[in-house]
Length: 424
Ligand code: HEM
Image (cartoon, rainbow, N blue to C red; front, side):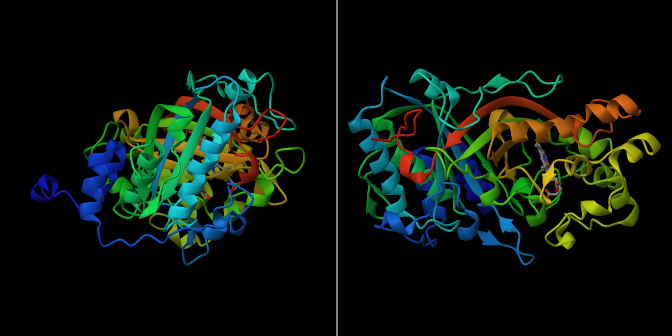
């Protein structure tokens, strides 16, 4: 391959393939990764979890027990081709998704995926989903002016293997007859059109390999071992909601969850050039962590908890130190000792810039809004020198460009559900 000749590292090549997409990217990827043997799936739907978002028991974990998110991601924004869902379309959608489950093990080594539906989809069927808090997306701070994503549906494909997300996408677009040597019964494009594709990655080494994009400073390279562009590990077990906590408890969509997906443009130039490491630790975690040196390297040493309980009171730090940490502020929005949202975000080079697809699951969208309000911290800015942007956690480095809300129904009603929750 040309890329070998140019000396691009193997994994960098693989990620570029996901960002590029399509049959030739997949072919090149398979040629490069041909030693990868991808575990096959199951013929028995009953052996799969009832929740589409049940990933954690099937994902990899690190030594401290933290879930390691799948490394490669594709989001397909989809529009339904019909007006009222027909039985034939429902069957096509279900057959397409069953093809994925037969082809790949439900795991990070195989494929994890969800299919969600937007408020606009339910609106077009005359209502909102019964018993679910699923408003249209809106701006969540006075500093942002995002585009609102309003496709009917969103498919999230995730795997540790670039070739799996690419191949699965090609299958769902009707461009392949077999996936992982298993025949494809139907394509999602039998019922939907693809409006947009977005891609991303998370995990040690991947951000460093993708710093050849907008917003990354030349002077300060992203650390080789960083799992995210901003240089720190995230998603510590004790700072995540459990899957049970984000699951809808009653009504026809019980067993489902809501998904918020924003795209955030990252200003890494400022993050790395304006501040030193201590300031970065103070702004990401809290000033006390900067003082004590609690965070080594990417923060791997913190085990399964960012130890935010060791941070001072946010108002005290805001007033006395003039700076407050991101994690420190967000700790206010916990229930039974854990956050309300389950973060499954990943980084991206979409739109030609270093960014994050901030994908979060919660029982109700209002819980995401509440969490985001704590990040805005208007109570602190009113009572201290901390600005809306400046010294207010990591707000200065983030610009939200897109927001979308979706319902991930339980697996049983995932094929073109009605607002009442029927799939038949
Ligand atoms: C690119 C942007 C972001 C980065 C790099 C980032 C990074 C982090 C880090 C390093 C932590 C500390 C520990 C941990 O992750 O377990 C954290 C905590 C957290 N973040 Fe973010 N974050 C980002 C954006 C957001 C956004 C947009 C939200 C939601 C509004 C959010 C919500 C949270 C929550 C709920 C916690 C846990 C707080 C607790 O333990 O109580 N983050 N984040």
